[in-house]
Length: 149
Ligand SMILES: [Zn+2]
Image 1 (cartoon, rainbow, N blue to C red):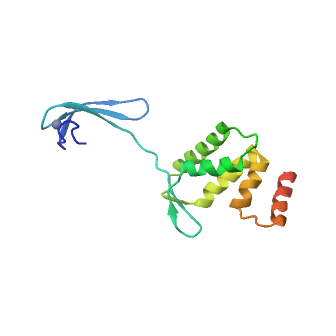
Image 2: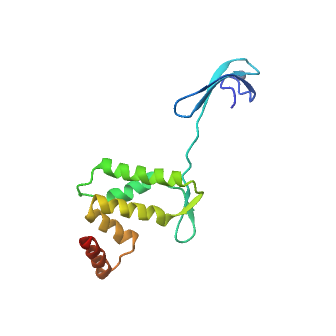
Image 3: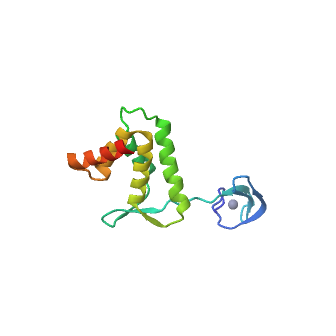
C-alpha cells in the first residue's frame, strides 16, 4: 500500500485491529515521510465465471440478472424486494460453491426454480426464453406440469 501523502511504497505497521466482520485494520507509518495512515483489509467473496453454452465465459452480472427477472415479472404481483432477494440468494449460492467456473445453466436453473415459487406466469415467461420453449406444444407441456404439481 503506497503512502497517500508521498507515494512511498514502504510503510511499517504500528497497530493491527480485527473487527467483528473479519476485516483487519492496520495503522501504518510511512518509512519516507513518517505520516500515519490506516489500511483496511477484508476477504472478498469471489463469484465464479459463468461458462455459456457456446463455451465462452462471462462474469456474473447482478444487474443483468435483475433486469432479466424484472422483465419476466412485469405487471405480475412480485415485489421488487422478492426479486432482489432471489438474485441475492443466487449470488450467495454461487459464492459459497467455491468454484472458479460454473455452467450458466446453474444460474438459469436457480432462476427458474425461484420464479416457479414466486409466480407461475413469470416462470413461464422466463422459461419460454431460457428453456427455449419455441412452440405452443412445449409451452403447454410446461404449463400442464405446473398445473399438476
Ligand atoms: Zn509518505
